Amino acid sequence: IETGPEGRPPMTMRGGQRLTGMHYDMPMASAQVKSCLLLAGLYAAGETSVTEPAPTRDHTERMLCGFGYPVVVEGSTAKVESGHKLSATHIEVPADISSAAFFLVAASIAEGSELVLQHVGINPTRVGVIEILRLMGGDLSLENQREVGGEPVADIRVRSARLKGIDIPEDLVPLAIDEFPVLFVAAACAEGRTVLRGAEELRVKESDRIQVMADGLKALGVKAEPTPDGIVIEGGAFGGGEVWAHGDHRIAMSFSVASLRASGPIRIHDCANVATSFPNFLALCAQTGIRVAVENN
Image (cartoon, rainbow, N blue to C red; front, top):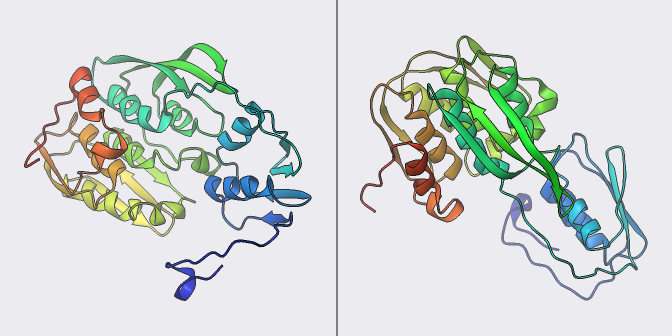
């Protein structure tokens, strides 16, 4: 494998080499890296194991088991061994909790709201957004809990609530890493101060989500101070304004939710990619009462 300077693209891979199982201690928690190594381990001689420093989503491990391939999980280590077979099966994919998060926050901050989000995946490695909203005083309940294709699923009922600022527990950070942009909106609507630490990974997502969200919140009049690994947000009333999503779909959708509590309109720039990542977002906004219109489409 060859890369450009500092491990950057372009990357060249040459096949024909025999893979050998290995153990890898991950320096940073990443479900994507873990999954890549486990999938490679299916075709590597012997055992392949991956140890992660913090819990990450385990959809790959569950899916492999669903296809009949044995995966051993011991504490923070997942192991596979070559030589087994995958068997075709029916897989039903539940609704994505990362997409549901926008509407969990929307219903929490809009007075008099109540929503039921149906058939949402509540994998224990993904429910940080629910736990954090509950710690902030959110009114969320899980109904009709069941298991589908090896994944836990539920209908989530959320009602508006008076949120309060909190110090977000660091052990919940990896369980909500993709939902923090919209959780920052919840924090802006909460009473008091919310502090996030241990989330430096947010700086290397589709954008620097800490800085971009801080800039956008400040543009609306929210007191938001970024730190190297998190942010400090003082909740309270805020106005409208112009914000830039920097091509990051979660930033754009988060500020769409913020419009529910803004005293003036919010114009969000550079957000065309929402149509690719969440094609029915605008339709669901209209259905639930979030007023979002596209300009210069």
